[in-house]
Image (cartoon, rainbow, N blue to C red; front, side, top):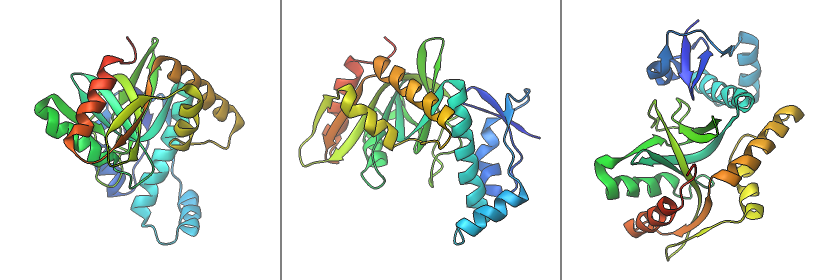
Amino acid sequence: MPVYKIAGLNVGFEPQHDMLRKRSEKYICDEKADFNIGFTENLMEHQLTLYKDVPESELEYLWMGTAFNVKLLEYNGMFLHSSTVVVDGVAYSFSAPCGTGKSTHTSLWLELFGDKAFILNDDKAAYRCIDGKYYAFGTPFSGKHDINVDTSAILGGICFIEQAEENSIERMNIDDAVPLLFSQTLRPSNVKRTMMLCDFIDELIKNIPVYKLRCNMDIEAAEIAYEAMSKLKGND
């Protein structure tokens, strides 16, 4: 069984379709698996019953991403539905419901910073706390455009986006930030894993600043977001 290093974890799984196989290729490694994830024929039949209009290749890819992110909770981690950009080695995640403009906003950072910036993951960045520091990781589970890089960066901040005519940014308080974090990640049905997620988010917001950005699609939005978030980075 092939093994893939994803978010610093060695994950064994056997892709059955090209979508998962091709998107995972750059993460392959020759190390022993920390855990394996299996996708059986019975499971595929069950998924096809639930999602009749979704191709098998896409179902496998989506299910594997969900299965990985469930296991991630056991390794002091979680994923956030976000577009995550890296500038000068620091990752900044922008999250919001689909269609709000996460990817459009991070594309402004690429325009602003040029070669100093890259998109780490355009849909589901993985976070882990390792030796007391929070990192964002690229993963092969990165949405329809498959934009991701097999690397990690110190997590500097998380920002929730709202569309607005004028650009403004503010740091959120804990009570307002927690529901938004829960709304844009996996909510497990298993009680034990739910407690793991609660504990991780509780520590995350003590160490990583969370912001609300009201923005239009002018490059000024990237400028004010970077100015605020880079001044008060997490992990400092």
